[in-house]
Length: 345
Image (cartoon, rainbow, N blue to C red; front, side, top):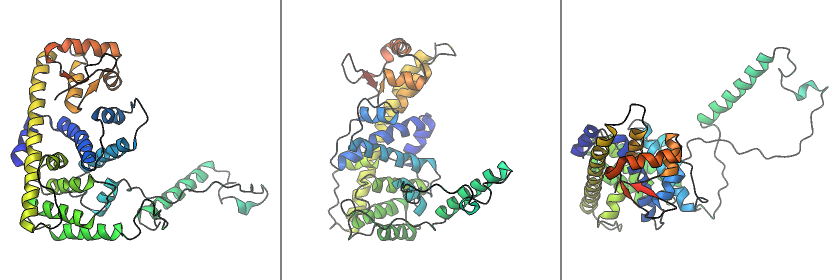
């Protein structure tokens, strides 16, 4: 793990590798849960260029990408905390219930008590500052936890016999008690306790993401490893009756497979960058071709409309840049005329 992290930092491709890893991890995590998501649809959905209405599976995959990006955006110990776990679940911003629209009688203009104290004040700035103070006061109460969550939860979605808040407290308490353990053992135990508690069954990707966050918090790596890909490739499948040694061996096999996949992807990126770098070295200083190369290095696939939107050029300009790459152009993935996509595979 340390050797791979050092190679990734030395290559200068850490940002692109992590971006590609997040997208492919989302697809593989949904695959482990029994759902198939096309990586091309996910790339276009992430760029806001959906060619069709997003499906339920595509929306869940996008949530998995947001969770991994949120975990990488903050310092290492934060994801393994109450606030970090809430943010990764997508409920970090807790607000009050939406006000119901009802027909209210308009206040009497002559009734001064029906209006705020500064509504009729001659100083308009004073009224604006009073409104800002009121907003800040409500925000402070929400962040302090004084605004409770609504108690009513639909039994069609939530299991009434399962208390997710209690299970979450148990898991976070276990992670805190294993702070002095070795990193691999702590991540393995945290993942197995997550499975035993059956925590957040609607977020199948979150358990392995938290395990990768624990490894990152221990300083072994500065990135989130593709543990979902490693779990899919490995033969280990927890049944709930394994001993501690079998669970640790199984988690180590998941890490080994994940590192093998990560190394192969990094080697492909380095080779593709070197090939395309020979072409970009001869371009003008104001050319958009190096940015197109960076786009190939940060996404599993690139289409002409996607490149035109992200590079802010015309589709014809993207076609010319693709032709300029020549033999260094990544492999075409679709083979169709109407919808063409290229990617480093």
